[in-house]
Length: 464
Ligand SMILES: [Zn+2]
Image (tube, rainbow, N blue to C red; front, side, top):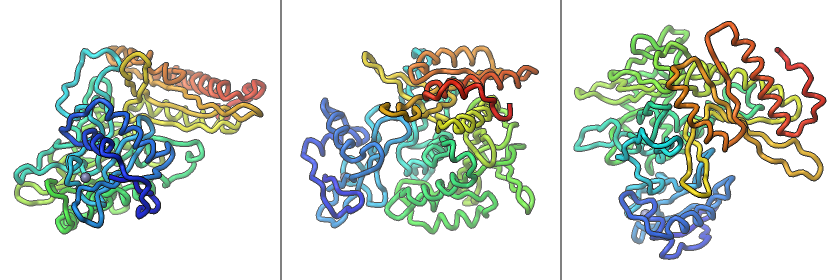
């Protein structure tokens, strides 16, 4: 294996040593056994490939004997978590241990969820590591729903497992930037959709197939035409032919996700129903993100097979949410972001769709998934380097006491990520007052941490 320049892949940076090569194959080859020292070697290679901001180098394999081009790996960092390898399907399939790939050697599937694990020590919910796993595996000619790539992977919400399709939806939304918003983006409308299209065009699922050929966004597209197009594509071996439809639905009614258009209502009614993520199981608080799988039934007819729905904040800004209570919180947070912007503090909001790591010096990492996180830097002053701050927000909705109790058990872990502020949301007359108090409290905390002079904090918050 060798490291090549990302921008000029014909330039070889350096060949990997035999011990490094073996470590990468053991680390990322599914079913391989990792040896002591592998983790350090792999981490060093990843550091070389990705400087924390962008990819500098690709890792080129050598498993195609005497071939001109070889399969490649890139390095990726998500919002949170360590650098990791990704297969680049555009450059061919591996003929080495990396043909069956894993992002890291922790057990991917089969680990049962441990309900008795102490808070933060459960099997964390993670993104789907490989775009190819968005497709179902073919087993002896029959598609196996919930096949590879994570029928498990932790809880989608406290106490509820996230189905595989939900994990794919969350991965897509996370990768395409729907789960974060910088204050300057609050007024832009369609940028995130452009990002999604650009992202899909760039994700190769095989040397010949990109995600953009599989994923589409218009629910009124004819199923027969879509599956005819899918049938005509060069398709990865061992994967079932299918398409994915992603859109924001106006409502979900009688088992169908409904999109209203100038031509009338367009309905997506999957044969196996629509499952929901988060606390919003009633599906009566639109709009909703919907990810549907399109394939052929046993008779060969094109159909919507199944779908997964997730609460969205609004059509203009479809941040994925877990409940209508969170929608109320997010509304306040957008207000806070605009207010502190006027005082010179730029806040980035994140809706964590996957779990955040809290490292411990003396033990295994702990995992938590706050409802929201706000990050910002100290306002620059002479001689002081801008420091990054984080405020963690939890929505405490009018939910079952047992759920709230389970939720608050992870709050001690969240407090190690940042200052924790709770927003209580209830269906009573006092909500406007609570919202007001919450907005002021979060705003004041941000200004204080960012080092904005006290005098201005008495200025009235617009709209309050
Ligand atoms: Zn290889």
